[in-house]
Image (cartoon, rainbow over all chains, first blue to last red; front, side):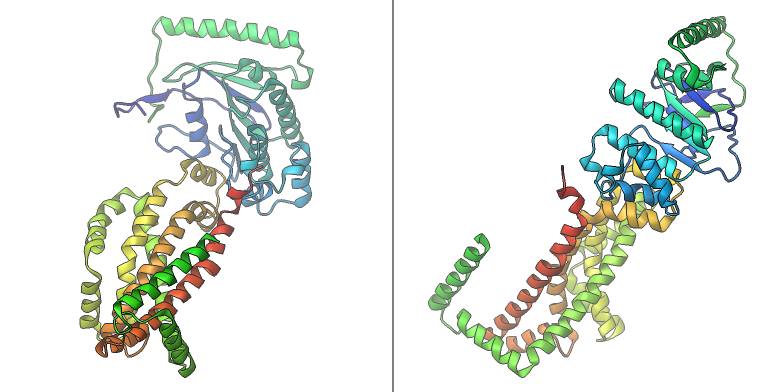
Length: 241
Length: 245
């Protein structure tokens, strides 16, 4: 990872759990190892020490930071490739909700980034996953579109009670979506704070969000305070790249 | 239109050359055309064309299939690349004639030896092209396939091969012309039929007309294959590129 070719720890002593059906959001400064965490959970990175417990036979749906669609297959074929057994009615609903119905026979090269992101989301949901992993799925979209997509995502996730882990560096987005927030420090990332949010997503008002953010700032302040006194434990759970 | 004009200029130059050099050295296009017609009437032309074409296709298929497999392996596995590279350099630089003669010496003047010798000549070319393509494969798509647990054959069919298409097309096009040239040598040296054999006979009789008749007929066949088969396949494989909104 490091330019000099030295091995550098990306994560250190990171551990957390997420209950079934909840949305967890990993927040941290960019480059801190959020994506690495997600890749390890997705089984794409095996260069780590530690353990990952996923529900047995849990199907995985992944939305990467870039859409990662096959340019030589249409939108519909891209989705069908990973979900060959998907129920046509379910797919139709999915395309409908994500407003992709008119783009089913388009090629990814004909789509805007926002549309391509939605196709990637549709693909991840089409496999009827038990776990959904999202890596900054709304980054570099304009606010209005991001808000709309966020709402669509929440609808889809709540309807299926699927366990979701999302990575973002946008605290507003995190507070709006999460049942549980995980804050990572800068590299090598440690868990700074774990914040459960009790208020249901739909009932969160602007005031709620502001107060949650204030609470987070307080907790994070405390966490960084501890760090500065030099309590940095280096037990076995190091993750190196 | 430009292609027709180009063809007309070629024919005109041929007539002029023939007039200057004399019919003995360079027979005119008309004379060659008459010779082609005569060979076609006797049936020899089609028989020899078919025999040569069959050899071309067998050797081509063998070289493409094996070359693609080896190229993919070498492009993706560093150890395979390290181990295979010296062999590749050796094969690339081994003259076609050496391979052909060795094949005939080792396994006799057989059909299998002939086709194998041609395929081995083409093999390193395919490997180099496919290896180049395999090195450019998109890691992101790879990971996507892994995350969604796609079966291996699906990854090969829908993710790897489409990315290799341009490289395979290049290998196929250069391969077809290379192979037919080598097939003629193989036929000349150790086969009792085919275009190469006929040209060998014509050479012994200094029958330039016959040489040109067979050469032209076969070039026409290869041209037809390129236009009617290779190009449409290429267009079909890259149709997603053309449909930009």
